[in-house]
Length: 145
Image (cartoon, rainbow, N blue to C red; front, side, top):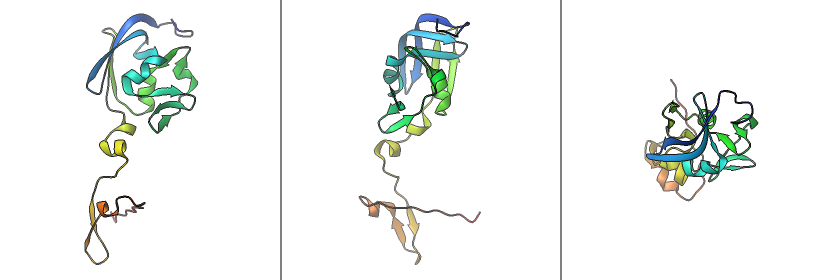
């Protein structure tokens, strides 16, 4: 049991459903609906790795407050809440299901390329964003409603 977790239950296994996969995780602790995993198991679940600057995946780093870390454990449920990820838990069955992580969702975030679109210029001629590939572009939008 982790220090300061009087109601926690330690067990060998839990199942995490994420990104179309079922990941069986050993050495977990359950505290209410919260799932605590070993820090080393995080990359295998969602691709994030704990570093001094936070939980990082490629060039995205999420700062992690101290209460989410305890010795070798990491509060996966609190992390999901922190990044706006929806989660459903069945602690009795030791199963947690997590939705997509909004900050890494979508192919345009993977490639860092904005989706192509077309807007009329001042003379009404269509201009496509793809025409500027390879160049830095500032897109400013405005709406009257």
